[in-house]
Image (cartoon, rainbow, N blue to C red; front, side, top):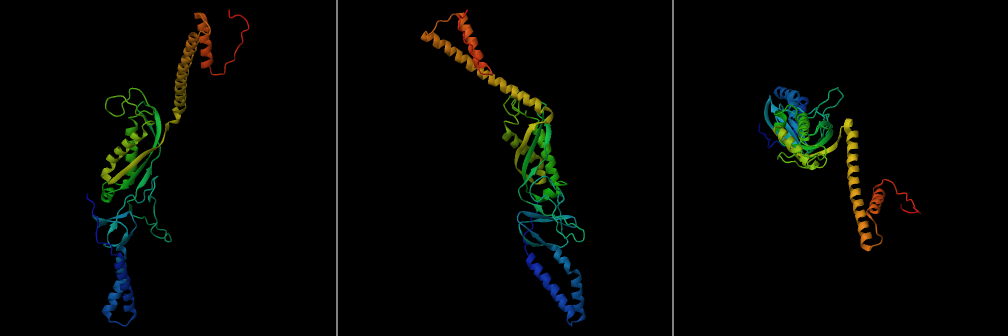
Length: 325
């Protein structure tokens, strides 16, 4: 279905003035002494003239109205202005009552007074850029580890006809497609860098991960969502990961794993530095001929230096006042 934008309808102010003038003339015609035909016409106009006011439509910037006439789509109004259309036209917006966890004018707006207990829902479609923040989801990554992830999607309605007539409710449709696209993409990545994992589909292992490649992952999520919602006339402008963590049931274990990995890496660095310092000390002593050490004394010296340099606590020296043997 192609979108039809109605042109030349911004004559609402002139029509409103004409309708009011006709009402005033009708009232004057009833009160003044006129012939019966004019009195009957004035009475008829007072009874049915209000129908013309139903065709007056006011739109603010970045708003649109999709109009149907007796069930047939006739076009839509876009842009701010005071419009007049066929009074029997009906505006359609199946998502008018839908309120999601997102920005923009997605909450129900009251267009009638509450005095009689009736609430009118605005059927205007917002063309503003809005942000959808879906609830966090628990998804298994490529290694089977459950992770919790949340995204914020920036979107905008581009084709109002498709948004209204192609899907039942374009807001709920977008929310559902965001959830499914997020699951499909997250399952391709590990939470952290893992060996022998192909995240790009080229058959070669790489360093892609949810934590380290968040920008790349977010762009793939945006592209996947866009493919799914194009038929609803929605353009996805951006997608960003707002929350990422291991699921609570494995968070403590994964934290211990990360701590163990960090301790191992730190120990490797300490040992490498300690061995280099011992080698430098032995080379300096031998080069300067400060003291001559046999193999047994060198082994004892190396042992003592490694204990001092690799220990977790400060060394407690012991002064030997006697012979070494």
